[in-house]
Image (cartoon, rainbow, N blue to C red; front, side, top):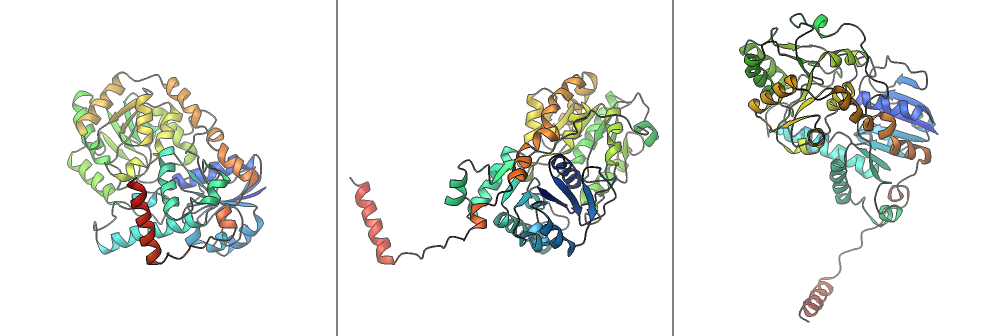
Length: 424
């Protein structure tokens, strides 16, 4: 099969999560198919087993014509209708519920711009759900969310049900993954990159970006409390600026810097990487840390999220402090590989950090658990789809017509019969 994998983020040394996912999905497919990984942003990385190219919108029509199957991120139908109109089997990756993320405003909460942004995102997602032949999600909880959305749009119908009553041929789970090889040190570590960190210091690491639906402020206050008991504790935020130029610095990132300065933590106990850690260099920083952390707010986005930074922590064998409420935090806590804490509770975060710094679980046990998330394992449903590349029966065939409403007299008669039957 000829497989086109699309990305809308930079495929460079500094890749954000969606680009990392596209890279690894394409890499797994390249072992079995002829793959082109195309991004509408910058592309500087190369791969011996697949073509990696930067394209403009008009180029996508010819690429879609070349492909036997297309794998694309959500918003592809609205952004690049030529891809959807090419008539090729279209797999759409729904692993980020962006409409829920955007409930956290960039500007005025509930204002016209905020309402318009969320409405636009919902419309974009609905375009994808109406057109896709096959969908990916990151967890079973996410799958329930998207099945509900598909049902409302009429995609759960006799044709898709008859095709597969489980609906796995319509939507299946492909979580974010980890590399098959263990992490290894490449280049300078935390103590070289951040003056003020000693190689012996216990370092808490925040592995991803700073977004409004997350809660780095409670973590910062926790470290402020913890430094009394553990003066050498250090906290590093690895990504303050997303490499996608379309994503601005978030409001909470500015609040984070301001609070760190007010608490006199910046440069002594808290350190910010103003850019983004290169993808191939992240292992060194992770291996130098002793605890990985991800804290978030209590809202609907949390329930359906899949915090991809947690996968890097697993890969590096890091014990974790995670806010409860999402799929991975529940899983990590139950496995004894970290501690899940209530949202917005700096004291609970501080206590959990102290516990894991002073009595951490064995890193090899964490890494052994992580094996289930290797890319070659989690991509099995996608590889199966690309080998067959089926069309959804309700998209490929004629659309069913909605019968007209029955006359009012018929409705009254049906209601009368129903009442009579219930009275028996």
